[in-house]
Every structure is written in C-alpha cells, then in structure tokens.
Amino acid sequence: MLTEERYAAILKILAEKKAVTVLELTKALQTSESTVRRDLTALHRSGRLYKVYGGATTIDNNYSSSEEDMQTKWDLYPEEKVAIGRKAAELITGEDFVYIDAGSTTLHLIDFLTDNGATFVTNGMQHAVRLLAKGFKVFIIGGAVKAVTEAVVGTEALKSLENYNFTKGFFGTNGISPKSGFSTPDADEGAVKSEAMARCKSAFVLADSSKFNKISPITFAGISSATIITGRLEDKKYRDYTTVLEGE
Image (tube, rainbow, N blue to C red; front, side, top):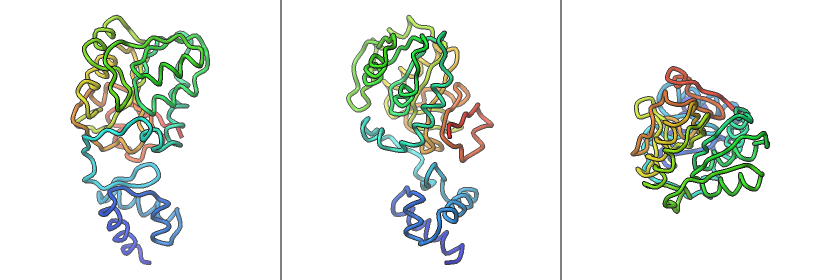
C-alpha cells in the first residue's frame, strides 16, 4: 500500500471512530507499528489528525463536556498514567504539605509515594483511603461528594481550602489548550481546583496525552499556572507556554 493510500485509510478509520490506537491501525492496514507511527507523525504535522500517546484522535474531537466515572477513567491509558504518577511522586519531599486533587491520574501518584513525613490534603474519597492505607497523615476537605468523580466539591469545600497553604499541589484535568488553559466539565469541581491551585506554592497538572488540544466547558487555570507532567509530549508547542515534565 502506497503512503498516500495509508494516509487515506487512517483518516477514513478516524472519521468513523474519532479515536484509534496504533495496534488497531497495524491490523487494519496490515503494516508495522513503526510505519503507522511515522504516518501518524506526518498526518499530525500536516494538521489532519491529532497524535496522542499510543494512537490518534480527530482534530474536531477537541471539545468535550462529558465526564466518565472513576472506574472508566482508571482503565484508560494505564501505562502512561503509571509513568506520570511515578514522575510526580519523585517531586515530593518530607518537608512538603501537599494537596492532591481528585482524579484517576493523581490516584496513580499515591502508589509511588514513600513514607517520608509529608502531609496530604485531598478532595478525593479514594485518594484519602489510599493515603491512609499507606500510613500517611491525611486531611480530607469537607463538602458535598460528586458521585461521578468521587470528588468533594461545593461551598463548604471552598471554605475548607481557605485554611491551607500548600507547598505543592497535584491536579487532574479534562483538557489542556494554549487558549483555554486547563479545563473541566463541572463548574463546582472547577471552582475547587482553582481555589486549591491558588493556594499552592508550586502546582502540577498530571495529564495523559489525550488531554492535550482538548477543551471542556470550565477553565480553572491558565496554562502558565502549573507545570504539566505527562507521559510523552507529542506536541512540542506546549513548551512555549509552560514547563512540561515527561514521565516515560
């Protein structure tokens, strides 16, 4: 199959599925992974698709107001999230007073923590349980629990955060865009993220590659407000807007 024929086939599959993995394309095109990856890179550079870790999405697939539940999120991009969690955990020292935002990628961070004396505050129900199980001193902010993400949100949560000053904060996001910054589908959850981030000396957003070039309805911070920790950065333009750490 000629190069342009492969390009056409890839774009046709993407038009139908909106997102596709390298493995799916190797099977559909009956070609090697290296060839598919080169094709995706070329199509990404020409603006015909958006290359993400392990595959690609359509360019017009960059706005989303949907929110998956925690189990669904946990099952997505597991290898990349593990790499991100490991990288983030390396940044925490025994002197830190740390905020951990609710989310599946920030949950992976906890797996790599060592009991070095750091203290944690979180609005994630699963996060608090996992931190306690590892023997850490942990506080959970008060407020209403959002069922889908198991995050504590609302007016009481915002009031709770007024008492804290964090050395470091680690946050999840649904979208990252140079123009729209870090975004999330829910206004209440966005308000908590924004308030917590404002109370951090250093803030980090943990995001797998599917979050880049994506916009959700509520912006909770500008892109320069935090360092991004990801698996492998495909779109180097993001380094023009903020610091990016890769956790491959």
